Amino acid sequence: MRYTLDDIQAPIAAEMQEFETKFRQSMQTRVMLLDKIMGYIIKRKGKQLRPMFVFLTAHTVSADPTAPLPEASFRGAALIELLHTATLVHDDVVDDSNYRRGFFSINALWKNKIAVLVGDYLLSRGMALALENDDFDLLKIVNNAVRELSEGELLQIEKARRLDITEDVYFDIIRQKTASLIASCTAVGASSAGADKATVERARLFGEKVGMAFQIKDDLFDYGTAEIGKPVGIDIKEKKMTLPLIHALREASWLQKRRIIYNVQNNDGRSDRVQSVIEFVKKSGGLDYAIECMTRFRDEALEILNTFPESPARTSLAQLIDYTIEREK
Image 1 (cartoon, rainbow, N blue to C red):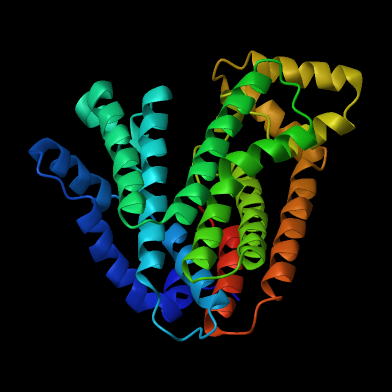
Image 2 (image 1 turned 180 degrees about the vertical axis):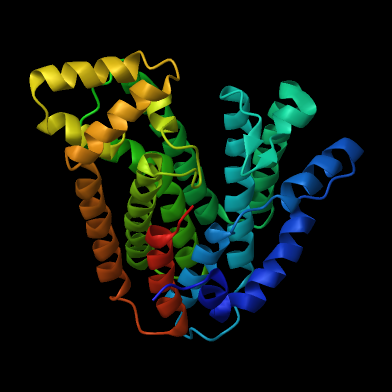
């Protein structure tokens, strides 16, 4: 059965609505230009999966899953959104990207200098929100995620130059780049609800497993037949080694491997070379292997989730896992 986000959000519908108001307030500023940009960022918000993970986890670990969430849970969700949005604004400058989720990026509309300053403002606003309320545990969790995200990006850049990424290195990269953020959401949710260290770690590991499955699903989109989520073949054009290609190359003969690596390194955006890589990966079982790994991470996440007491929030988290790996964009 496929669940909609409205179905999944049902146990936290009131919290999600309250969060939107609180998040807007946390981004208010007296500088007119900055306030205008903050308003633009809020308007183009995505599916809000991150605050959903925070609130559902907080309810799941709570002694009373139906009790109202503490203010710390809302601050934790806002902290994650502020710091993550800052990294995205800076990423768009680094990548010289003009679009983000179908909207113009901040640097496309207001140029790089302003975009960098906006990213800096968001970082400082997030840290201030935590420090003003003595949320040191929450800040430590999110700060670790931002550090890992940066390290994962740099590791990917380093390895992409030689196209020598092994499966283990790939898993390290996606654990840092993607899974660490979702893990921070679930850890913040647990910590903000007053859970002990062991429970916070269990919640963090649950989020990490979900994040691994999420990123593998994202990488599979690159081998689709239509533009779903991102243009097909974009990872290959950017010389990014993802799990389907890594597995296919591992199974290939020396000659095949040499030909495919040449096409990746020298594709220059040529659709025929990109398509030849896609076809090679499909025929070599790269997609099937990636799906198998994604499913394994999903199952491991569910196994951890089922160690928590049954509740509507736990049910929604299980549905959210299915949503992340069955989504079409």
